[in-house]
Length: 142
Length: 340
Image: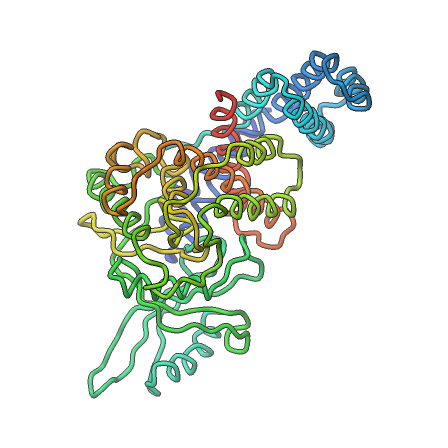
């Protein structure tokens, strides 16, 4: 598509900040417009990466589950980890990726609690968590 | 709507101030956070033969609040610290009923000709950042120094046992996350477990904790003088390191965590706080409270996201908090705890 959605969002934010907000008389309206412009800029970033971020997170968690399942003593949890690690994302719709992401996150929390409680090594889990947090970070113009 | 507010507020304030001829003009909403609706207005009245005109601020509860806060707490904190000589607006009137303006509210002095630093700006204070930073951390030290009983806040919400104030706060914010999370938060959950497994030493003293002492919650004038510390709605009793950890959190550093609040170098900031508070800074304890600060941030942003997503408060600030700030603090905590 030309123009792309992220360009439309960024230029709309620019229009709000440079033309519309200064022309507003009320301080409250100006402030809200600036926040809305920031949300548009964030939406532009997310438009391009949303599916990729979620698919990468889901893949990372499945790999992690496959790695750590053998050291999990709890048989039920180990089976759930093995089943989850064998899954894959069938759709690239963000809503479908989000649904899978929530299921995997729940399992990740249970896995981390289990490993912490059993005195195991959580470094690989933190590697995945750091990567997840890094991918979701947003950048705003200064 | 503003005309309606004016018409209803005029007789109320006239009665409270004892000035029957009071008139309100130019009432307009201004930015003031998502937890209260904030309005500025002019009040004119005669007192002892003299015509008085002054700027006042109305803070009214919103239909749904970001955090369930007590406007009474905020009002009492304004009264206590205004009386102590800190730059805090004079509180005028507190109304806890719903008859006057449909929701509870309070009125306070407007501090005029000032501005507030935006967290969206990379350098909001320009050449005044060092002057502002020294006052910012000095004022925080003075809040920590205040005797809670002497200033009449000894019965504020919170924990008076120095051994328990950390766990009181962790439990408080864990409850918020339990109630408001809309999706699993593995980093917040890991942080909660870490905080419980690695408790800080007991508080050196129990102080009034402002609860949200940061960039954006103080006003400064063109000369770089801090004129008002605002938003005391989360004030409570606890460990003064809680406020210090929040004030130096990277979210408020405008992109340079080595200069907390976007002002002065960290070492200088902590030295000023130590001198003004009269307390000895325990760096290990502060490290715990810094982790706690980011976790508390996550809890607040999780609440904001829920308010917005469920259309209970569609203020765009809630969307920003529940998205940008949530992502930011997840990154801070993952980097800090993942390196431990």
